[in-house]
Image (cartoon, rainbow, N blue to C red; front, side):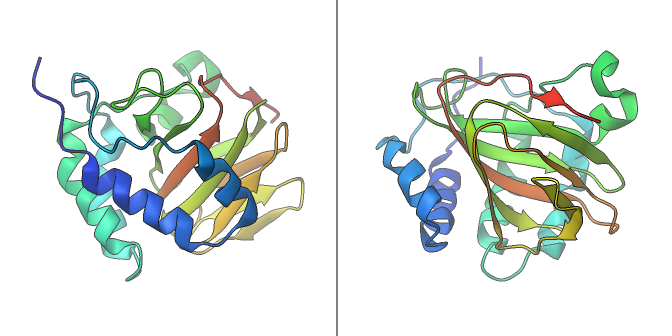
Length: 200
């Protein structure tokens, strides 16, 4: 197995941007942020088709988030990219344009049983249907013009730099209907990932 990638720039950049947001719920969730910024273990690299859109995400990233998006783009081939769903759940087209990687968590580079954090990526022209889950969650939009449906409020644009806070069981969905991939940093205030309940 290859050695663990240097995730410190990803961890530090993500923490800095979440902290900079000043969002009260984010500040509370960040209290569970592990002190270690270097990998506890190696996780075998695994690529997914969606990562081919990372250079485009870097080109679309604003000044504040571009350094982190650049670090992620450079390290992407050495990271383990995952998918929660199967083709039976949401179809082959969705899986081709969807993936995430975990920095902290039981299966991440840094072991944590209180917080999961990493990056979620959607390619252009895909909808992550409205869904919900038991864990509290916060997203930070790093790159991409996209539409969001939060708590049944209808589809609205959320620009890069936006924090989206989802309390437990709050309905939320995203669709990349503006011609750009969507890159998000996430905080999952729980120790395990669960498959979300798709509502649509």
